[in-house]
Length: 526
Image 1 (cartoon, rainbow, N blue to C red):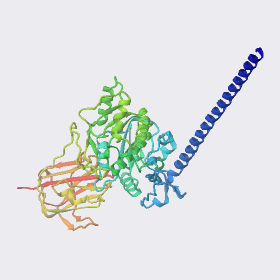
Image 2: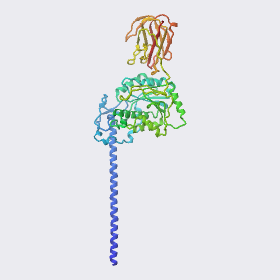
Image 3: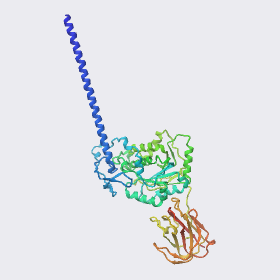
Image 4: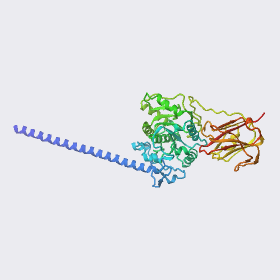
């Protein structure tokens, strides 16, 4: 009996030991399976990372609008940006979009990109993006960012630059930088804008006041198969997504140039003392924490940031480039920085003037900031202007020909860089007695384009007629007045009483600034 109980006890003990060993073995298998799963997951992550790296390396050589595609190694250095690569097939502005393999699987349309995709470019890349002008050695007070594209017919950029220049002093400009971003993909359009800027603003490029940049193609994330939020058209989604990326690059570039950064558009004008107004508003708000101050109530015009915040704002724009318009991202940025109220200066100091949007399908209705007060309204006076013909050896810009200076309309003669001894000659059909004379240069949109050093002369006799290539020849000219601040007003009946056959504007010193002769107004006896 005792032996049976002992045998049973021994059997139970053995079974228990075996069970424990089995459980241990099963646990080992479970751990091993877990390790295998972890190894497999790690392998997949590493493989995906290699694939992502491969695609990132290929992307500079491909069209920036393509999400994923197989690209041949036919890339060359792009001299326009000092290094980023472009596809040889795109050299003639014929951008070919290869087949997008994501279309085969809709689940791949919005892959999550790595943090590297929206990282700040290296300092070398930022320096290479500068295509005109030079960086200043020390940082200043303010950087003004202006993204621009070439419109179909309008030329807004020069008007904006003229306003910024003429409404500020040389001392103020020494502490300010204007950064212009050429946002067109087409090289021809970029070249047109660069040529205009070089011709008209060479002195400002030389001293670092104006810097012109363009975004390396390798910086752009995919611009195809984008999310269609808010029921926007594909064209609009592409336009606003690219705009987010362009702005982000500007923010990255401007983050080290000055203490503050101001974003405006390329079709605005400002008021006298705008820089002093910005300084005063910053000082007024110095007792509170703010992420942005606003100097216009519309769009992304006149938005001011601390330079140290620009990298964060740029990163936010890159992360959500296909999800939100850039001006909405700006609003979210303020909220994220605990600024829940708009801090807008009133009156505003920037007014939007453009009718033609960079997006063709966008409503061309002019946006007006109702809080803006214009300090430079121009009135055209009524004059007799007896018939005559205007000649000039100053090169005219496009359709702005010399004869337009002698019409009682808002049209004008726009000349490129008047040189010493250049002339504008008005020949009357019949010699005319003049009682009063007013010649106005510059305009409300181009206030800096004035004749800086010139005189008004008259002659009583025409000797030889002129033509488009040769100025007319008149007898000895008599100087009757000089320009002051781009304008001359003369009571001629007190200065020169004989009849006048030729009236001449004579340039006494060369200037780099272009000149607009807005109106030659002449009164005769009645």
